[in-house]
Length: 180
Ligand SMILES: Nc1ncnc2c1ncn2[C@@H]1O[C@H](COP(=O)(O)OP(=O)(O)O)[C@@H](O)[C@H]1O
Ligand SMILES: [Mg+2]
Image (cartoon, rainbow, N blue to C red; front, side, top):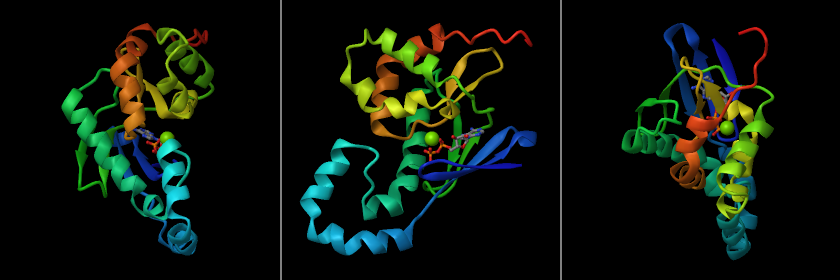
């Protein structure tokens, strides 16, 4: 068993059962601490959080992990997209079960570069969500040697996957390590 922390979820990996359990991180105390400032400057916060996925508001601190879990299950169920590591089950976003995959290491630049190339270096949606694609631990390599994505709950990420995900899956080539 291995436990990893993402930005909004904690993941319990159970490779012996080929699954990973994703639980939302619900930051109630931090949300309450930011609440007075948030209410006072509501419009500024709201605008900032709509424009950037990295700005977290008090509602986001409580709900983001649940929303990501729900989004991940829905998107997988609806599309069965080949780039996605299957999300098999969600209990109202409070607990997701995804197929286990070893997170990649040190390959963020290759992945981001491939998706940039596919989008002709000319699609701001890829840039807006670039931190998802430059972080290799959001990806894994499946048993057929193809790349798959582990973290795809966010709406903008899903937009990019709809546009370029099929080509990323088909065209991404893993560097030869000499051990394979
Ligand atoms: N299916 C999986 N199998 C194994 N490890 C995973 C799986 N999904 C996620 N992880 C690990 O857990 C971390 C956090 O999960 P992630 O889906 O990226 O959550 P967050 O949306 O909070 O960033 C990932 O960076 C990865 O290391
Ligand atoms: Mg992540």
